[in-house]
Length: 394
Ligand code: PLP
Image 1 (cartoon, protein in one colour):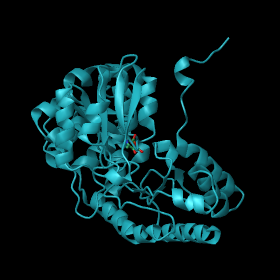
Image 2 (cartoon, protein in one colour):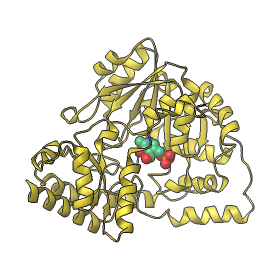
Image 3 (spheres, rainbow, N blue to C red):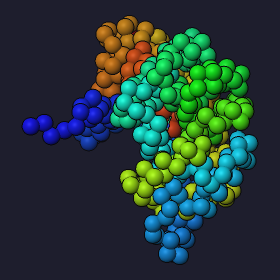
Image 4 (cartoon, helix red, strand yellow):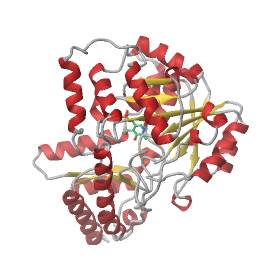
């Protein structure tokens, strides 16, 4: 008898896991591996946030909360969306969940029936296709390559829409490309979504990590009509270096937020109470640490980008946001004798002792993703190792 459900048969573990496990194995053998796989800021959570969490615990705020989050936290999020994004929401249009990841999971459970399609631009964050499939949905991929700055066009979106399309996912700034859609591009995409009556899932988790003067613009800001069909997803993991606290949220039409909250009431009960109090401080307290962390990422990018671009056979677009670089290394892999970028990645790890993520997991198999959420010293050493590796085998 097969004791497993069909829905997990095609579930693939996060691609980052295999390489991270191998990197750990080497580290355990005493080999000095530099890991550039991280998807989280390398800073500690700001002190004022830690203090607020401790204070809430000392006051005895350690019990269940409403399933969709504390009213005070929802208010802090409403104020944030108004202050930063000029978006106005009411309490019943917000749900707080266990990280943006689980909020997205809940959202797909609520909007998808068996066979419903969700348009996912390539390159994509690894969890979107799996979450859509777990909800019975079908991921429909739309290609964008480096020549179009890893951004899909309105014409491509229109072409991908069928009778079964429920939603399109827009992730700007993007993981893994670091690219940011302009207001004009979003306007064109939104017009197609309105025309074909589909939802827009706008994952804005990297909103605060933007470089060289690029500004964030939420697609929901375009008009009331667009806002009504957009679910804005965001959180404090990347902006406030709070990955482990697991707080994310969605803002959107109450008709979608309500069933999401009902589902949460049966699946999670509530996001961790202490983390909710921490997040109230994250949004209501001083924001200088957010900017300080952004500046640190930007200065690393400025140092590392030219060095990475100078590695033979590496073609790198300069990212505008997030903390990833997505070089096309197909030429470097071929010239150094590897059949695929995946094999090249394995060799980088075992021979150059640098762990990066193969782009195949993001739908772009000619690339590797490396994160600059680590110290400049380690970054420079990692790039030097990759450079030596490629030159020695060229
Ligand atoms: N969306 C994207 C594009 C991400 O890269 C991540 C984290 O890696 C998330 C959502 C999830 O964030 P959280 O830690 O809030 O679940």
